[in-house]
Length: 356
Image 1 (tube, one colour):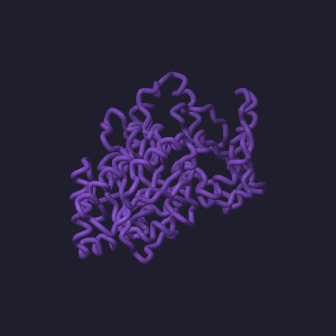
Image 2 (cartoon, helix red, strand yellow):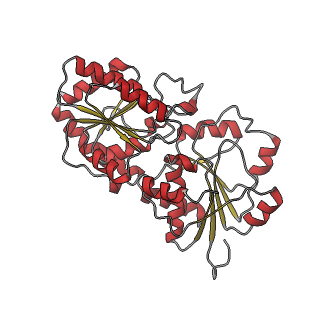
Image 3 (cartoon, helix red, strand yellow):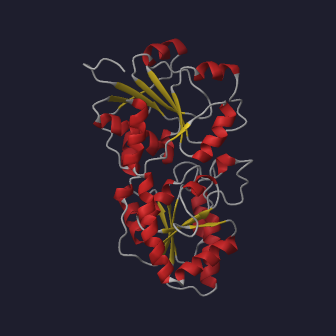
């Protein structure tokens, strides 16, 4: 790949970069890794203000990353792309024309019904060296839709940065406050928690943390109204250090992502992997998540967490944990150990195998 006497060049594109979610962590972790290897790294984005947002929320040092716009015609893009040793492209469902020495197309979403097997897509895919998915759940849909055989490289979770602290009676949920594509359904969690409090559970607090800057402010305000007068705390757009701290204190982790969704018909609306679940496990939180999507690749039922599908089941499982400290202690040890399978180090090792 390229001339060994000059710096290797990598270009990255993520159409959702300003949403600052799991896909963005995926892209930037690989970008950061190549920087450490001495590569020149370019991010294709036209708003330089995004640097501070990404650095603050995802804890990345982007000082040596170049940002520039690529909104040009196909010929000009061809001239630009052919100078790269590597192009890494996060797909929005479409297949781009890529002309680097090595091209990697990444899918975060289990796209279906988007005409993936079209003639033009087949032409474009000839230039793609590897297609990478974030989970076997995503792979199943992508392979069928585009007629490919993708690789699975799980998202990088900085498990070493999340450690158990002095535990408090806290149930934590971390996820974007949004009514967009993948709804986290914090409203369901508030409803369940209120029922538990009304039934006599005391001394416990529910903390909901997440971003509101992508279509979520109105929904966030609705949730605050719903939780009024109950021990529910909100962390809006929390910095990384704040999340680290609250993860360390929490005993139980809740997620309602995918609640009420048929994952066969609408796979895009369930959790495709579940980075926050792994972060919680690394910090010693016992995860209780909807048993759909990528969650089934993270949790072993009864050993490293629990699945739930209806509100009564979530209440029952949570109460069983609260009332059985021995069970919670056993699970605590299991979840911390299991989280290491999804480390940043493993992620980089997997990409080493296909880039170098």
